[in-house]
Length: 136
Image 1 (spheres, rainbow, N blue to C red):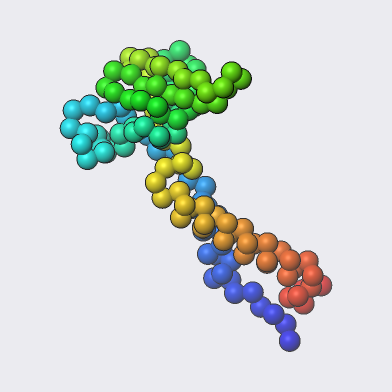
Image 2 (image 1 turned 60 degrees about the horizontal axis):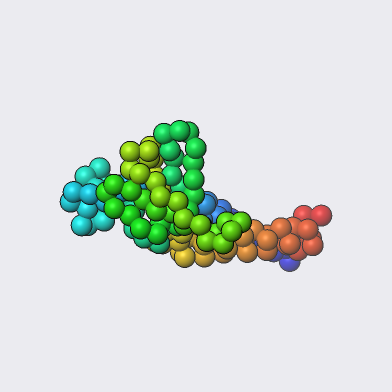
């Protein structure tokens, strides 16, 4: 009797892997009516503890964890060669702020979906290689 791998299970695995690979989301500094956590355009407001990528007017990009934030500046922290280093960035030097998708809310579900997808794909490859499907 030949084992037939359900195609719907493979489709779920692929979708789980794709969902686990989230893209960064644009964010903004707090200001005005940001009490709900969103600005007027619907962008998330940066909060202490968020991991962000900041694109500067000079063309340089920097990544770090938000230590403090206010409408006029952003302080990022990260481990460096000399311990924990911080960098203060004035708001007028910032072109764009992106929240790291892997470190924001909902990331646990995305990681679980990605891991489950990998497990199903590994199982499928194992069955294929071992001849469990009767294909060789």
